Picture 1 (cartoon, rainbow, N blue to C red):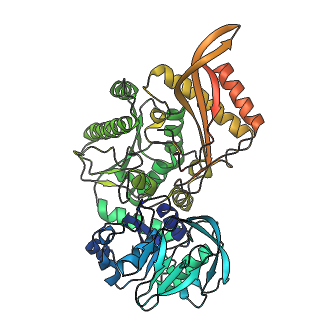
Picture 2: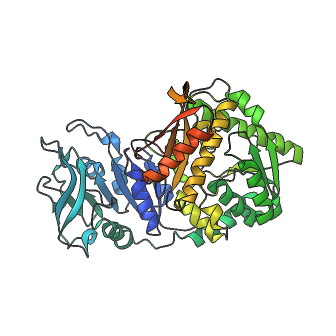
Picture 3: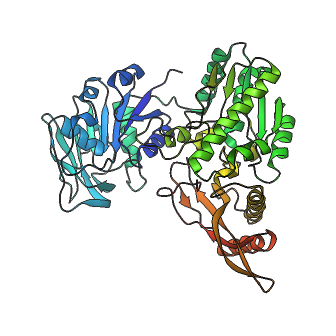
Length: 512
């Protein structure tokens, strides 16, 4: 797929994923790589432009050229430094970075030179979002100032001949009023990118790519019934038809009645060849006594692969395995970013000795909202495309501590009640993701005039676009009250319900 690519070099922090998503929303492909990616690798990608962004914890003026190779400035492509990225540009090219006593955070009024190509078509004064401890005190030779705030004397700068630009503020956040226009100016007018990152183009390219890779080979797909694996299965089936066999592994960690529903739906609606494997005892045996969430994920990821290998032997030689890996999975697992948040069962949890010719991950480049668009482009019904996100390890990462059959039963029943009441209140399409968590906490309660000492269920509900950031959902109190009453009345061994009001970051969406 020949397309223009903007490369984000990630110095860490919360903003790299956000700006990648903003650029993709403008129909230009954007990829994230670590800040120390070798220049030769960047050169081979033939990118149209580079953005430096991040938030490394640097004390005072302790900037070192090893943080980012100066060779990137010789690649002949436009470069935009944002916040720390702007400071890196200035320092590496001979400017000075300074840490003042008075730091700047939040909304600020910025004055801009609108003769700059980066700021063309926007107001000379506007609101921007600042979040920095250091700022550029003096510029490298050949650069000029193009913006300032009351506290930041150089809030923007450029060398138009070299096509290198820097802004101390964050254009990717919604608080910066003209932020989207600034990004448009950079990717369209400076990098000369075309709007070729579209859902239709992606689907057509993916089908051609899968056909080339597979040839006349046989393919297995791990179908969980979640949005990601469902879209991956339908996309691959559209490319190679009956060469695909889907395996649905019921590991006992699914939501109530989910196993039967998934198999019936895909056989009847999409005519997919599905093999259902009942493996609850096998998975629970491997997970017995395991409390560490990373260990849970890795065990489940490895056991999935072993099940696939065994099923492949039963149906003959199989060449490829399909997985519904998406871009946030890759980023959070530490692949192509500055740090690992958590391993995902189909990324960081894969064992080394996979007995397939290769892995097919057709959605690996996509954020969650892009996956849904692909599903709709493929003609999938909305009830599948807009299904609640569900982690590959299932309820294993929604049970804090060790996993037992009793705990699974408690959580399945509580989660079913939660979903029923959200649907009854007409909120199912207004909340991006919602689910119950069985905590490891027990507390004293009262039931039938007697003392109880039972579990606490935590309810989680968030709104998000791409899963990289999320805000807790404001569910009406009367709905929460009804959910709590039903869970504590109808589910055994639960006497307390709490509601999680944490955003991402600092929390993640899932508890484990």
